[in-house]
Length: 411
Image (tube, rainbow, N blue to C red; front, side, top):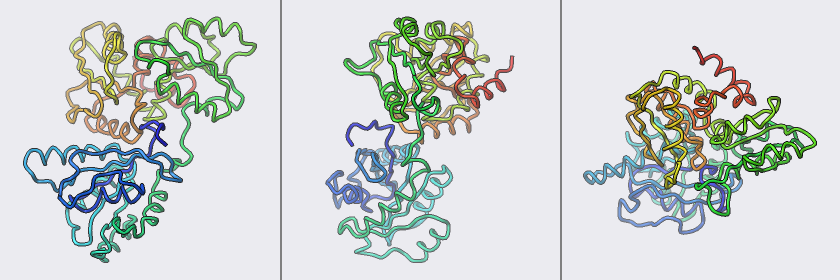
């Protein structure tokens, strides 16, 4: 429950006015005092995240947001802005209201989530004090929007809300998609090439590597883990060729040289481009690398806020490879964590990380924002494969993505 990665959790966001009981609702659902509750409006200032287990959904992340009716000057506007940013990473939205407060604010919230394609549940809290308005309930349910009346204070109908959450869970959540297990048969052998650099936590592997290992073991595949300089020796020791080789993107060239042509090869970052985002869109976006020139504006988007060390992949290596490829100095900007720019129009390309610490909903929201701004977006591993001239090899395990690349790679 406590060690499941944040990006692998179902994100449940609670939105609404101040003092409608959003924090109390989280406490009721989790059966503990997770969030601070007060009768004073505006107790929750910034979005507060709490990782919990909610069976049968499994690991979830509750996002308790500030009231969207906060009108307390500039600070209130900042609180509202942060709450609205949380909408982008929400997998299921709970619009919380009371029977005496439902108007344009709640209507806009519901409409916004429906436009995003985010499942939304309307929760009328404090039903022990005031009943949900029947005409509003009937109208919402007529639109196919689940409506649940609860009392977080008394625990009334929280079971009904849990059932609504289970029903609203995105298709395939309880049986989540695979990282790599679908690429090899049961009993298949996968070789993972894992360079150990300064950014790898001491005594541990980085998160995408751990998740890939677990995913392959769940798929009844065998896994062999080596560093890049041991790959050639390991290949010689095998009595059979591996069904797949997965490498850290930084070692692409050496690993490609040491892996027989008939063995499929890709990278962890490309696996996560598919797992956390939209592989075909990222592949199509990489064609924009051919249009880069001196002065082109490139955004490097990191979903985490790690401390850069030495030859940082996003801040040093990828800009260097891109500049070597296009033959000129690029105007490179870096956005870390949730500081993804609202204005993308002036960028020529966005290069996104593997997104191991965030969820797929937020990555898809960023892809949509790039699409709306007419800005191509790609992914670390795909950009590296393109810059190093091994795109066809790196996309070999993904026929659809390879076809997308061939359709977009116009000389």
